[in-house]
Length: 147
View 1 (tube, rainbow, N blue to C red):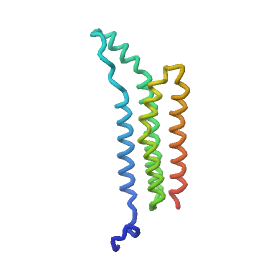
View 2 (view 1 turned 30 degrees about the vertical axis):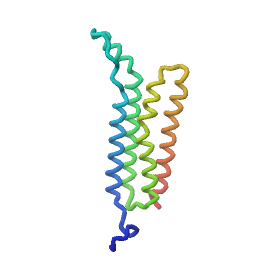
View 3 (view 1 turned 90 degrees about the vertical axis):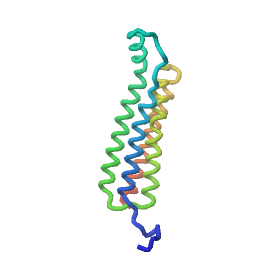
View 4 (view 1 turned 60 degrees about the vertical axis):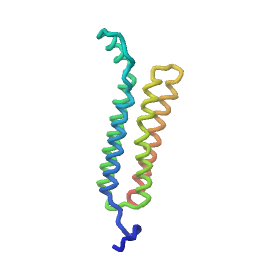
């Protein structure tokens, strides 16, 4: 090889390592979205009630953790089916990782507004739209993988 970037084969291993890092960071950021409650009364009951009131955050964390985990497994399985990658695949893969990295934000919005009658529908729609877009991008990655 003469060092021309256009002639150097693209490395699937590097792409997978980068993707694994993004998935790991996205999952880690989910737990950081659960905020420590403000100081409460010194009784155990006060702390228990305060921690229990964070149930929407726990639910959002658990659901999004599972969803990101499923996306990681699917991405891993997809990469096992690929012999070579090209520029288009890398670009679409980056777009997919952009969606994955964005996941902690709609998770926080969902957790924050899940108990609000006025904003619940919008929060759930935003959360769902995020994963719908992610699924669309994943399907583009799937289609391009063989070209």
